[in-house]
Image (tube, rainbow, N blue to C red; front, side):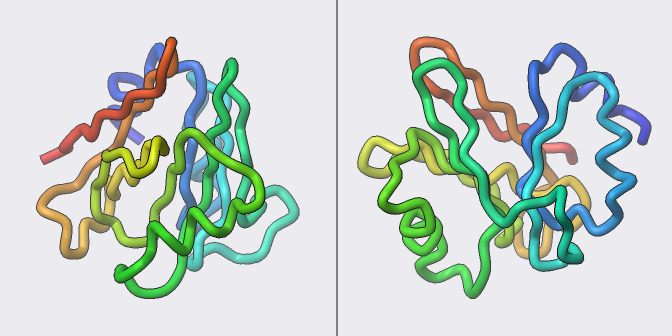
Length: 141
């Protein structure tokens, strides 16, 4: 995939929030390790869990695809991790880019680089973890 190195070169870890569709896609990310979850368009797989928590320093990052309509999606996904807590929730499903805090949790949906649906643009996202977690949406068009 052209342009992957320019977009993802230098990142420590690639997180994919599902709808990979073709598992060979994950082999394209040769510049960094990849952690992914299964989306509703992915076949059941032993290597793609439905959700996961990634620890980076003192932070816990929840990674899940999502399901159902857009109304209440964030609340449904936050409940998915209870009784555990996360500092950041990365999700997909809606294809709508989002980067905002809610009750101290960074809610982050990078959007989609391939199928923008009702989103204003194709996009990917970058999360920086230092003394806090910050996210940026990167429009592709």
